[in-house]
Picture 1 (cartoon, rainbow, N blue to C red):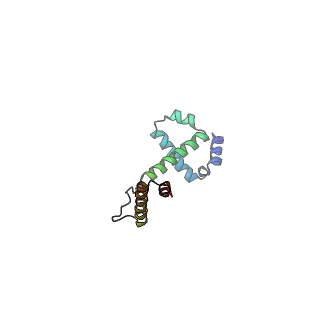
Picture 2 (spheres, rainbow, N blue to C red; picture 1 turned 30 degrees about the horizontal axis):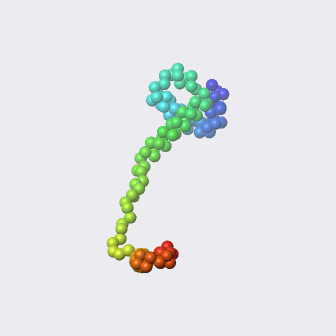
Picture 3 (cartoon, one colour; picture 1 turned 90 degrees about the vertical axis):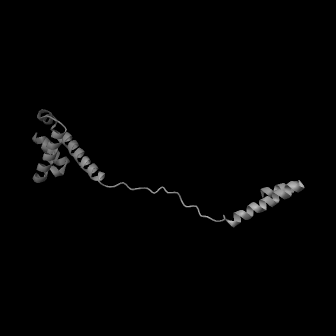
Length: 119
């Protein structure tokens, strides 16, 4: 048992300080009681690996409870507003010139006028 305590102190330095160790042992015993372990079951688990594992579980749960108090960030999913009015005049000019070229190609039937549509 003493060897396990020494191993625990080397693996987790916070167990080397008497005051801190007493507090940690109280937390660990409270954890075992809360989880429904009997005294015999706890004694069977008393090795440095299981104590380190229980210590990590206690720290994880404390961190998770602390993080639960932080409100989640709301993401703004509103669409971008559409501007009213006419569109881009350059786009309009292209469509008008395309319509003119298309009308000319239909009227003449010339292959050069049709190719001009794709340029």
